[in-house]
Image (spheres, rainbow, N blue to C red):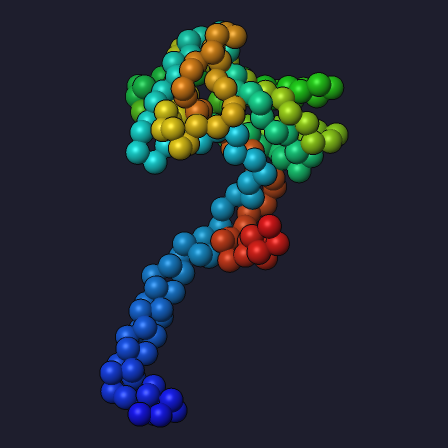
Length: 194
């Protein structure tokens, strides 16, 4: 059989049709994920786990921090994953403070869900330049739990502390974002550049 006719056999045509249907089906089913709007992430100093979930309890007026955190001038929000037990009272206000040499930003987050892992999002002022610092959370009353993981593959250089005492082997979920949203397909150029 010559090279030109080898790819025209019924077996090759059937295989090509199967692959085409598979690719079209994948694109159709992945379209919502590929085009979903999501925050523009500038840094992820701490990760949430895929298979393991760990919480760090923080009582009223105690301070939990994560450091080092890379603050970028484009970062405008700090997001943490927290859990507050279900109840009828409003959740405790959380003071979120970002600090670094020559930089300080503070905000209070008052509204968020109780009884489930919830992403809180606090505004932070832009830094004058890229700088390493720390992000701290202080409940003004009650008790919260910062959510993270102890999965070895998800542990990062960022160390969690509560009132200055290290919490070993835990990565607290922290994300910094810039204004606006993006999609996975909108980031393909950035991914290709890197």
